[in-house]
Length: 91
Image 1 (tube, rainbow, N blue to C red):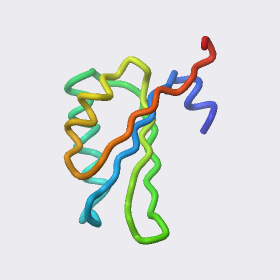
Image 2 (spheres, one colour):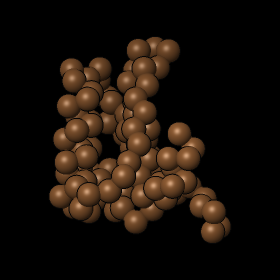
Image 3 (cartoon, rainbow, N blue to C red):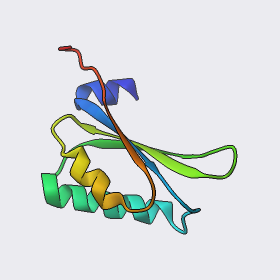
Image 4 (tube, one colour):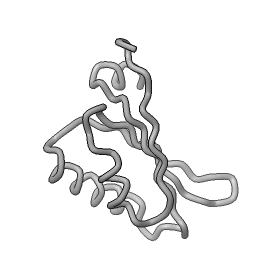
């Protein structure tokens, strides 16, 4: 996974949470990535969904550094988002 992140310059991590248990988390993520492609054009990304200990669902989404993460987070609308810009080799 680390090789994928480095090779594709994935340097922005967005944590997507759900306020309620999702009916179809995959469909939600696909809709978000479709919106991202409309805003930014095609780009590499990596998503890791997780089910928490208490049954809550969230997803770690890692994308390129040049993606407008704030605009993408605003489109989520299913819960909270957190954006972290990861250090890159050049940092």
